[in-house]
Amino acid sequence: MGQSAGTPDTAALHFADVVIEELRVRAREDITLLPFLAPLIRGARDGFVAQPATNPAPAPPAFQPSLDNFSGSDALRQAVQDTAPLCHWRDVVSGHPDVDPALSGGMHAAHIFGELGILGMPGMRAGLFTLAPNIDYPLHSHGAAELYFCLSGTLTLRHGVNGAPFSLNGGDYSITPIERVHALSTGSEPVLLFFAWVGALGAPIYWWHQAKTGIWERVEWSRDSTGVWNRGKAQPVDQDMLAQQTLSEKE
Image (cartoon, rainbow, N blue to C red; front, side, top):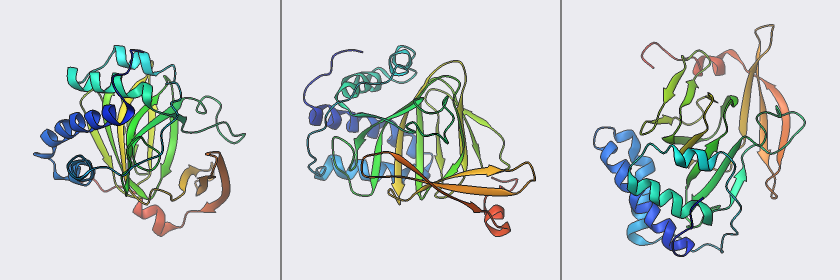
């Protein structure tokens, strides 16, 4: 990984400027990007919230190959390279006996904006997200809308319990609405994303599963103050809830 440039705040501010321009161009054709773009613009214009100093933690093994195969602009690549070493990279799904070992340790997030990031921002979390090769993150839902902007590799997504898979390549993005179940997977190459969450940031995540009998259930997962995942009880999914997660042909 290359050397970072400047202080964490300076690097993160420059990263914000570059991402704003990337999203602004796309938002001219797609106003659904505005809820993710507007907080960044406000922060850059009015100032972000002061944060305690971030203790950097090393980027995961998937980061450097993703940077080597970067698909975005030179300005965005440089901003990523400068900011990534200054971030605290977190294991998204830390080890737990109920989690597939292939999944645990395969996804890492570096929060740049928001309460866990370098620059504070109410109501939003955003930063970099890596997925190792051959990852399958099962259907799950959360109380925040989610933006994925692909910077490297190919991410395959599926929305809804009946949705068809679709792919994101470098320069592509997707928006997952609040509480929409979705699944992620990677192929033989790692994936690097810019992610952003807006909505109920502290709400639990629910993993969805269909038993062999055809019955659906969801399991609540939440993080404690140390960042460790705790598994809650399985909850049955009733027909109304299942209908809400069944996509129409237009979706």
